[in-house]
Length: 372
Length: 125
Image 1 (cartoon, chains in turn blue, yellow):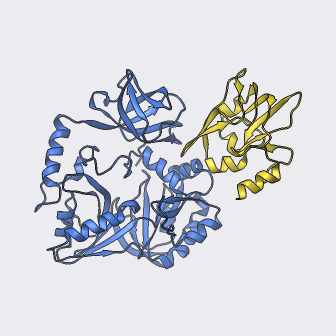
Image 2 (cartoon, rainbow over the protein chains, first blue to last red):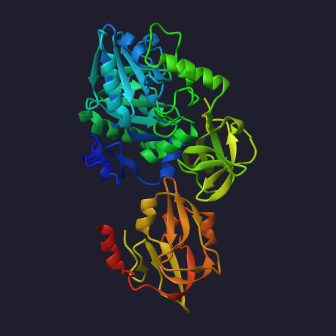
């Protein structure tokens, strides 16, 4: 643990007044849970949950060549993203290793907002700044310019509609538009990390408390509750969404992580990691080392990140994330396993849980998909 | 939260009831249950097993982590709480009552068990 003091979001006092259990997350003092993390998880699946995600790292890229810069710096075809739309993408090093996974919002023709994981925000900022050399574009650190609140769950459209005139019905998944929510100027994005419909609201930090309180009040009647990072982790795990530091790392390319679709070789111009990624694509198609799979427990003991996946007494993989799934009612995990054992239903696969080999079923991801 | 006066406490956050016919009940404290978060799996020692004060005798799994369960005293397990095995959430909802873990026939107990007030001060620090 570093000796750097923890950073606090604009909602810090409010979290404490709600009795939140706080945790150090990437240098930020964040709410882990307010009450039962299982109740918070189920609220998002069935009603609505309110999250403070202000630790996420916003970086603004502007200028006539902003799109061209992002096409060079990131693996996606960002220049082709329409104004008001968002894209899930990655930033890789020259060897194709993943530096971070990102959401990029196109706010205007010449303005993009890149949202990085808190733990990687400095790395992403440094890489974008270095890669901007020679482009007519500016990279700006906007980490302190925004608070980020998320409303997630089936009741979230109704809650938000009661607080804004913005055209939410016209706002598609992975789109964002500027508007006013509860009198507060906000970038309203239909994105999330829970597997549910929902919204992420980027606002000035000085408006965060006011907006949180308005959302809480608007959601009272339909069961919205405050939710911490603990349930965010189980929600994204059920939805099969990767988390940097678990399923994603610099040692892996997007193809190794089963996310090769985010790499766009047919876009204009060169991009960082292109050559290495072309080789990684070839390798993944012909001779994949390990494959990301889902595991569902037959018993009740919970697999944790780092535990060995075993078959026939041999180690055949490693758990990257594991938790008791509130929706399935049993433990689940994501794991990288040898390709020979990766097919759903492969018999004889288990997880070494502190010395005892517990049986697990190999399944396709995700574990949970919402009904549209 | 308040720690019942009639119980004694270990620094590993177990509580121990006064002995009835030489048998004491053991559970984890509300402080420990809150720190764990939702408990989803409880592994308890088997009836008839001998546990040793200060040594692990089971485990508690929550959403975020797994924690060892330590025996606060030495003795023989005479009963385990099947209700809490079937519904581990009892540890969170009633740690001092329905969420008890096992009953032990005490043969030896360490001197360093804490009173309720001492334990309250210990966990406040």
